[in-house]
Image (cartoon, rainbow, N blue to C red; front, side, top):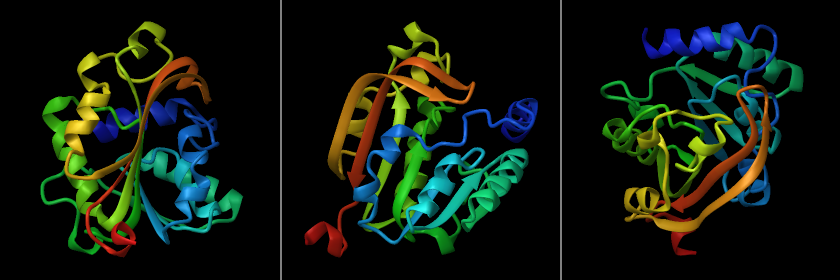
Length: 215
């Protein structure tokens, strides 16, 4: 089963409910003030729209990339209900030649929330795509699970190699300005997909260059 079919089946099986809920990820939401240092944002592997819709509510011009057509349909309904505009795009961020030229270095913020559906062999490519999307002086925000999450079993991948450590993220963004890198445990309540005590890691990193980086 390909990734589109796999994720569409998961989102379809949730029925009218939203698999990961309709509220934004807490690590992202707690940085609402910082997000105002930018005009637009792109959310990768956005799912059913909980994070992209919230970003639009903060006044940002938002683009959301998602591989599942079922998820995008549900995200559109969420945006309509919350009366915000989000540009939803169905795309595989790992496809050859992606992102298209129109999206390269186009965003002040590139957001990746629990995008650990790939192992180390694809993670470098995943981060490379996110870096290409970010304008000079713009930022990437990541939220993920650490290997300790396997002890909790409250969401996320079951493969330890897919999970982040501080060292993995420091090495991946060694040529960027890491403004925040935190590991912590917290209670997560995001639909039925993420619920309970969780081992989390959060990153905010700024791309070199651009006026924001030299101000």
